[in-house]
Image (cartoon, rainbow, N blue to C red; front, top):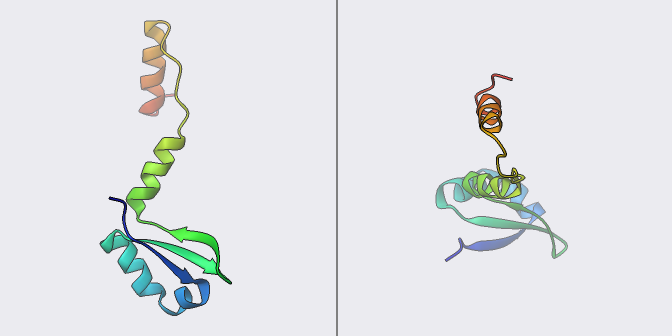
Length: 80
């Protein structure tokens, strides 16, 4: 079941910013920020952001030789 999604105006979000951040970070809620009733942005837990960024990572093609594996490992640990 996805986390609760509350709609809140940007004006109200400014007034309650600290509480809003706490609810999102500790309560794992998601908040949809609106302006004149139109959804403009969202405040989400950091775990959701990490998941989204991982989903956007490009998928590398299959390795063609052992040297490809060595090169990738070097990149991952910062040797190149």
